[in-house]
Length: 103
Length: 402
Image (cartoon, rainbow over all chains, first blue to last red; front, side):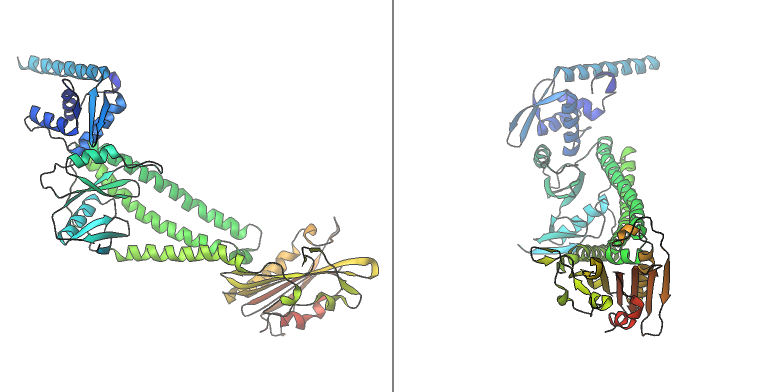
């Protein structure tokens, strides 16, 4: 899910990936981060989160680093950071294009 | 623990229907213990508000339940109650604040679409099977030119029932495919799934039909494959029951004496054997072999005797066996010389109290076949020797008379 074969990240995907930038995260932490960051606009159910974490792990964007009872902690990989950066650039370009048309 | 069993009123793939029904049962104090497509098990408790949700999850035979998934869902207040057919998980929560499982229809679509494709592939496989099965049944029935005997002794009846059952199953599976297709389409359009829907109170005909056909199928299959083994092995000729067989000594006259081919105390040249089939509760095979003192000529007689469950098959079976025996390759007949041209004459003998009585003899009268049918009984005699079967009509008729 890196580079050209990935395509644009959906909004939930983008925020979940964002949640790992500063620290390792586990399930509940991720949803709290996303809700807080988006002021409740983006909510993640456990099914959605589980699917996203599975896809990110499968694509090598994050990796599981610790299992403590029911709590599983994940960390973003260099490939994940690159994917996030790429998405950020794409969004910036979108904004530039959009604002350019407004002038 | 107080268990309650309820017929499942909806298909497992009717997502909103299943979720609504299970929630309604919880409101009546019945909590899901085990979900099955035909009936579910509940435990009794105080009435409560519970949300149930179905989650597709494909699990191979040796896979464990996905612990990481169950743990994550648990953190959000959802417990896994049961698994259905290794393809669906049922979660429940009592917490009204617990978030919905899915907030992104597009991601959820992929899961349901995968399940849809898997059910569709299984449907196609069953459809191919349903199309191939009649061909296989046809081959079993007509393969060696004796359809009546094949119908009685082969798996025609169980396989035909299996075909009917398969068709009914395919019709039901088609409805499941339509349900999953609708779910998949709705999610692909970005519309979240409904969790509340009207559902039928019961579907007794579907359940009754399924159970009835399954039980009949099992009885027939078990009956067909187990029953033949309940007959006896090879036994001495004196132990024939149900009828009095024609005697090779009577056919051959004074110079005849029995041959013997004994292994471990069993004479494979002179024996009788009984078998059971659903459509022929008593079938006897009687074999006699001997030699004539003059020239040491080998003679043999084989009797197949049937008591059919379907008497209307008796006459066709007798006729078929006469026709079939006269068309057998020469080397099937005992002591048949190679490359000898053979013509058969078949003579019927009405008026001896049988539904059918006929003797077929080849031109040299070396090989002879007789068949008699009366009511549900049929006797077929194949004989290689010096006697004349047409001179023993009363004995032939007696084999099928009570």
